[in-house]
Length: 240
Ligand SMILES: [Zn+2]
Image (cartoon, rainbow, N blue to C red; front, side, top):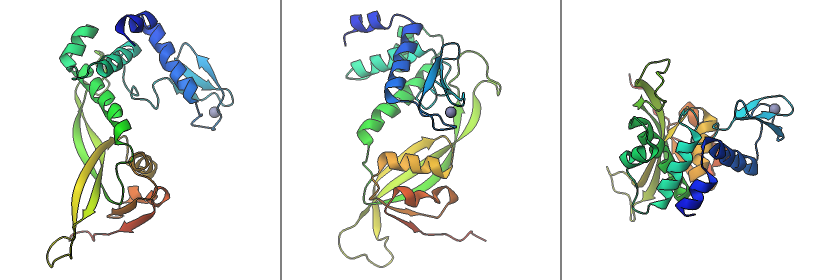
């Protein structure tokens, strides 16, 4: 779509909301509380409310925009700009185009969009034997609007990262004192929490059910067998 048509179709925040609403309705909404699939559009809250139990699914929930306070128009225009520019566009340039005061929220938004754009290409690249591990990182959390957050600006948050390492066996006989396997490819994904369902969802995004999993038996991987062919636990006893 050229930029004249794009701007014509999405001239304001309202039309961008309609755009995201249409995408969500085409995909179908499943109530997180009761599983019902029929919803009312709640204009005031920009949400889909379950016809059965009233549970509210906001337009942002389950999308890249979740927990962001940036306007829908920012998201749609940035996705457009990023997909139209072959060599990539800088966060500073997008910030200028949107006319936003601060750089950081724009950078964070683009980082998230890039992650989902990459995700499509990355699908199912993890196969064979994959070692799973979890890690925690302190991250700088500042994706909000110019309103100060409850925790204050730039608060530190802990992020959980799922580390997936594809194991590529070395050709030839394993030698003494040498590790029998070598890592060929490592992928790290920031995940919202360390529950076993999040682990399973994340793994199944990148690996087919035929994958063989190796892990240290951490509790988050308890149900990983559901989305894999085999789970080999190598439980390391705690150090004394
Ligand atoms: Zn419901």
